[in-house]
Length: 395
Image 1 (cartoon, rainbow, N blue to C red):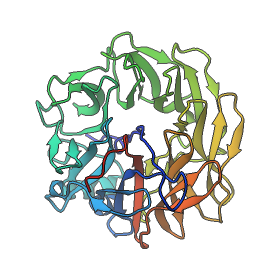
Image 2 (image 1 turned 90 degrees about the vertical axis):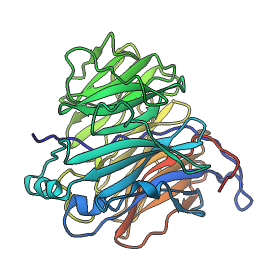
Image 3 (image 1 turned 180 degrees about the horizontal axis):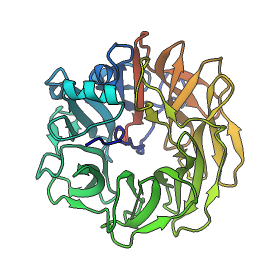
Image 4 (image 1 turned 135 degrees about the vertical axis):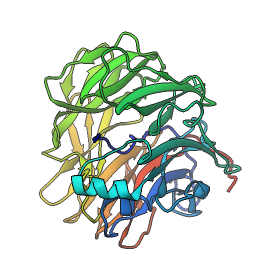
């Protein structure tokens, strides 16, 4: 059985800020992200297995690997996947793949995520004592469990499980118990699972069509767009709009629709941007990591990336479709994975420059930019996340 899938969809969570002494308004917060090698021969797995979940201050100081104890096998890795609502715990995905299966995938250029060949679990890791809890292993329902996030009630966790070869949106209690499938009737391969801010409605794409449903999976409704490819739905901060990509694979654009399924509209044209960032310098049969649009803090606009002749730039568009290009970069620059701050003043993002993928933060009012990571060629930084709350420093 061959399964086409992708790395877990990563989540943008809220956070707090504090001014530093060296620049007024520059955030003082932890960020989580993933570092990896990008140029090792052997294809995707040879590099993916070097992934390590990292945390640092926003200025790049106090850089530290999280949960190194989870990398207990040469073919295992960790990926930073989010924060708990209070910022006290990090969400860490721990993956493993049989190297013989990895060779098969390279030859056949597709995933084969069967039990015994793959394992993916989601952990909650305490920043204070570094203890880790594998909540997806409790009353296990799958060998592949990703996309872990906290529902607004803070008593429930959402995740996506691969069950009998089909990816399903699921819920569980904070201790990992009471796992239940909320995919509803007639379900297909689902991904991009998220919950509305009031916790009453969930959304996901299933067989590349957008669906919304009650939190328990009932009252499932298809959001028709007329397009074959629909991907990565996320809720606006007020829960009244759903944002997603729609079009054709490799040529889609940001769309929004109201919570009740009405007022579908295309917000912007990404100028044939392929919609993914290649995170390796060697051939990747899966075409890298999805680069999806994200909401601004106030929900009145959307950040996305757009292709120019020689660069990929950051842009912002309001709900009426008025776009502003935020960056103008040297030839060969590729920006990706924008993550706005909760106060609306800053944006965190990745940028490929001079052949290296680094993380940057930009002041949206002044356009002042600060580099966070300083990696050497052959290494990269991906999937950044603001800490969801500013805690007293324990580090």
